[in-house]
Image 1: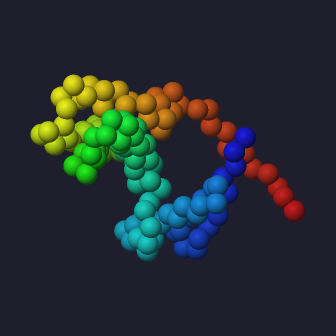
Image 2: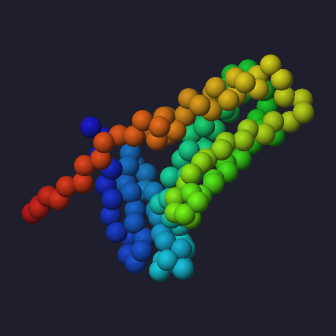
Length: 133
Protein backbone atom coordinates (compact mmCIF):
# COMPACT_ATOMS: atom_id res chain seq x y z
CA UNK A 1 0.00 0.00 0.00
CA UNK A 2 1.30 3.48 -0.89
CA UNK A 3 0.52 6.44 1.31
CA UNK A 4 0.17 10.11 0.40
CA UNK A 5 -0.12 12.68 3.20
CA UNK A 6 -2.51 15.57 2.51
CA UNK A 7 -2.18 18.70 4.67
CA UNK A 8 -3.40 22.26 4.81
CA UNK A 9 -1.09 24.92 3.43
CA UNK A 10 -3.18 27.71 4.95
CA UNK A 11 -6.11 29.51 3.40
CA UNK A 12 -7.36 27.50 0.42
CA UNK A 13 -3.97 25.85 -0.16
CA UNK A 14 -3.72 22.07 0.18
CA UNK A 15 -0.49 20.08 -0.17
CA UNK A 16 0.18 16.43 -0.95
CA UNK A 17 3.41 14.80 0.24
CA UNK A 18 4.39 11.73 -1.75
CA UNK A 19 7.71 9.99 -2.37
CA UNK A 20 9.72 12.98 -1.24
CA UNK A 21 7.78 15.51 -3.32
CA UNK A 22 5.37 18.18 -2.18
CA UNK A 23 2.60 18.88 -4.65
CA UNK A 24 1.00 22.24 -3.85
CA UNK A 25 -2.49 23.31 -4.83
CA UNK A 26 -4.55 26.45 -4.29
CA UNK A 27 -7.90 27.74 -5.41
CA UNK A 28 -8.31 30.57 -7.89
CA UNK A 29 -8.93 34.07 -6.56
CA UNK A 30 -12.57 33.86 -7.66
CA UNK A 31 -12.90 30.67 -5.56
CA UNK A 32 -11.43 32.26 -2.43
CA UNK A 33 -7.78 31.31 -2.90
CA UNK A 34 -4.70 33.25 -3.88
CA UNK A 35 -4.17 31.52 -7.23
CA UNK A 36 -0.64 30.71 -6.02
CA UNK A 37 -0.67 27.13 -7.36
CA UNK A 38 -2.78 25.02 -9.72
CA UNK A 39 -6.21 23.92 -8.54
CA UNK A 40 -6.50 20.17 -7.85
CA UNK A 41 -8.74 19.62 -10.89
CA UNK A 42 -6.15 21.34 -13.08
CA UNK A 43 -3.53 18.85 -11.84
CA UNK A 44 -5.92 16.00 -12.56
CA UNK A 45 -6.35 17.18 -16.16
CA UNK A 46 -2.61 17.78 -16.55
CA UNK A 47 -1.89 14.26 -15.30
CA UNK A 48 -3.74 12.83 -18.30
CA UNK A 49 -1.74 14.74 -20.93
CA UNK A 50 1.60 14.39 -19.20
CA UNK A 51 1.06 10.66 -18.70
CA UNK A 52 0.28 10.20 -22.41
CA UNK A 53 3.26 12.42 -23.16
CA UNK A 54 5.77 10.18 -21.44
CA UNK A 55 4.69 7.28 -23.66
CA UNK A 56 4.64 9.37 -26.86
CA UNK A 57 8.05 10.97 -26.19
CA UNK A 58 9.59 7.66 -25.10
CA UNK A 59 8.32 6.06 -28.33
CA UNK A 60 10.05 8.79 -30.34
CA UNK A 61 13.25 8.70 -28.31
CA UNK A 62 13.56 4.92 -28.72
CA UNK A 63 13.52 5.42 -32.49
CA UNK A 64 15.81 8.44 -32.57
CA UNK A 65 12.98 10.74 -33.67
CA UNK A 66 13.43 14.33 -32.40
CA UNK A 67 10.65 15.43 -30.04
CA UNK A 68 11.23 19.20 -30.22
CA UNK A 69 8.26 19.72 -32.53
CA UNK A 70 6.01 16.95 -31.22
CA UNK A 71 3.28 18.33 -28.99
CA UNK A 72 0.16 16.96 -27.36
CA UNK A 73 -2.75 19.37 -27.30
CA UNK A 74 -5.40 18.33 -24.80
CA UNK A 75 -8.95 19.53 -25.47
CA UNK A 76 -11.74 19.40 -22.88
CA UNK A 77 -15.43 19.45 -23.75
CA UNK A 78 -17.77 20.28 -20.90
CA UNK A 79 -20.99 18.43 -20.21
CA UNK A 80 -24.06 20.15 -21.70
CA UNK A 81 -25.15 21.20 -18.18
CA UNK A 82 -21.79 23.00 -17.74
CA UNK A 83 -20.63 20.74 -14.90
CA UNK A 84 -17.71 18.40 -15.38
CA UNK A 85 -15.97 17.16 -18.49
CA UNK A 86 -17.83 15.15 -21.14
CA UNK A 87 -14.90 14.41 -23.43
CA UNK A 88 -11.12 14.73 -23.46
CA UNK A 89 -9.28 14.66 -26.78
CA UNK A 90 -5.52 14.27 -27.03
CA UNK A 91 -4.26 15.67 -30.34
CA UNK A 92 -0.69 14.61 -31.10
CA UNK A 93 0.83 17.24 -33.36
CA UNK A 94 3.86 16.15 -35.37
CA UNK A 95 6.04 18.03 -37.88
CA UNK A 96 5.75 17.40 -41.62
CA UNK A 97 8.89 15.25 -41.65
CA UNK A 98 7.58 12.89 -38.94
CA UNK A 99 7.43 9.33 -40.36
CA UNK A 100 3.84 8.62 -41.43
CA UNK A 101 4.32 4.93 -40.64
CA UNK A 102 4.42 5.85 -36.92
CA UNK A 103 1.23 7.96 -36.73
CA UNK A 104 -0.97 5.06 -35.57
CA UNK A 105 1.77 3.79 -33.26
CA UNK A 106 1.85 7.19 -31.52
CA UNK A 107 -1.86 6.86 -30.77
CA UNK A 108 -1.28 3.38 -29.37
CA UNK A 109 1.58 4.72 -27.25
CA UNK A 110 -0.58 7.54 -25.84
CA UNK A 111 -3.32 5.03 -25.02
CA UNK A 112 -0.89 3.19 -22.70
CA UNK A 113 -1.29 6.04 -20.20
CA UNK A 114 -1.97 4.62 -16.73
CA UNK A 115 -3.99 7.69 -15.69
CA UNK A 116 -6.36 7.22 -18.63
CA UNK A 117 -6.69 3.51 -17.86
CA UNK A 118 -7.56 4.27 -14.23
CA UNK A 119 -10.28 6.68 -15.32
CA UNK A 120 -11.71 4.11 -17.71
CA UNK A 121 -11.60 1.42 -14.99
CA UNK A 122 -12.14 3.54 -11.90
CA UNK A 123 -10.90 2.29 -8.54
CA UNK A 124 -13.21 1.89 -5.58
CA UNK A 125 -13.14 4.84 -3.17
CA UNK A 126 -13.44 4.62 0.61
CA UNK A 127 -13.47 7.74 2.76
CA UNK A 128 -13.12 7.12 6.50
CA UNK A 129 -12.48 9.12 9.67
CA UNK A 130 -9.95 7.95 12.30
CA UNK A 131 -9.28 9.52 15.66
CA UNK A 132 -5.55 9.72 16.41
CA UNK A 133 -3.62 10.86 19.41
